[in-house]
Image 1 (cartoon, helix red, strand yellow):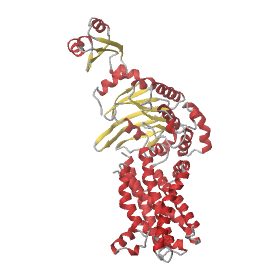
Image 2 (cartoon, rainbow over the protein chains, first blue to last red):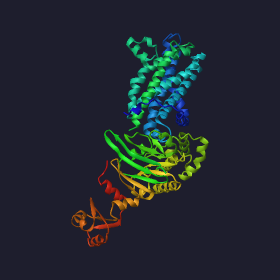
Image 3 (cartoon, each protein chain N blue to C red):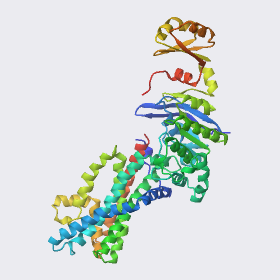
Image 4 (cartoon, rainbow over the protein chains, first blue to last red):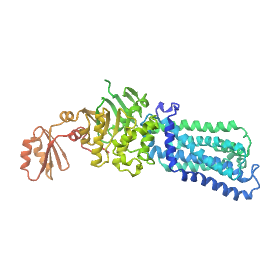
Length: 261
Length: 304
């Protein structure tokens, strides 16, 4: 590995034409894409929320479905960014060789990786807002504070896109991503307070959950949806940002190494 | 005037294997320069080094008077690239591919839109403007890739095996267009392993093998410098046996390859007269070409 791989990212606005490229591709499949963004989280939320929720008196001071709505927003944003930064970015880097085409122009790998993170976060934002609209329509959150969910789902997108790109930089083929989803994403969905409070878990698992980024997203989302100011908001935002920045840097170093071969 | 592309002692190794080994090169404005070599000779790595996409282990290079890779980004503003493997955007139409690519050069949409009709005309794709990439033939994709490489009106165009995998009609069309580009004063650097392509297009050539340039010059110069002017190919089951007994008498140099014997001669008269009396053998008398030079310099064994 050459020393030049470790240079800090050089960030410029040149990422924007690449982001526009991704946007133009997405626009062509917008309708099925929006349905895809919505179907999975909304069915989970309605099925578990009403089905399981009818057996539970309340959770965390709200109805179970309202409790679940905040968690669903977080995990569906995580999923959107993860899918895009793994499968989408890998297709552009490896299969379609889009990155190679772009690198022959006056655009650098730093710009490309930045564009991928911002694009994945854009997908999170779109899916998050779509789910949020369903939540508002169902009357599961009526506080203006829930508007804060919009920047939050963007931040969740940045965090999971940056971490996901590390996997993309290491992946020999698509199969590799199964490990990440099975060993990282699914456990986070089940341990980080999406379906039940983390406090219900044994202590060891609670400690693990506290280290995972999704827990911090949920800790921010749940009070916001109820119209409350989250406790330790700066700390939670800080954890998510740290994951995002460290993930960006590590993935960039790995991409530089991979593409210099 | 400074060379448009210059390399001094460029060297690059991967995993202890030297892929480019002390390469010196100067390519001048308006020249079409061909890099020939068998697979694995280091041609693509050389292009990547000269484009500043990878760092050399030793040596230096300049592209349009800018040092690469240090100022590669700035240099690439006036460079076009036709890669070996197609990397067009499959989700886009022909025109969208050009528009999106032009944006990477910082061009305004209006500026790119104004160029698209000319680019499509040049690539003979005017009627395919709104066709999606997967519906194009191989030749059309190549032409679109060429048009895309010209979207920024580059001074230099890099082409990595521009006609590999194309049928003869498609190749001839690409050749015409590349000739047109050199007439416009653009500098072309292309790699190929088609000798007829190199002979037809290139003002100067370099033969590369094992990371080194082993000979360079104009196609005619390379032939004169490296090989006897006449070739007589002798075929037949007994050709090898014939070669053992007679080839050295009639030719300066000969090579046996399966049931063929290649005799390289200054003057073929005596050899041809002799062969006319050999009823078991067929022969072909022709002037030496670049392929003969290539095989002499890089050997006949397979590279895989």
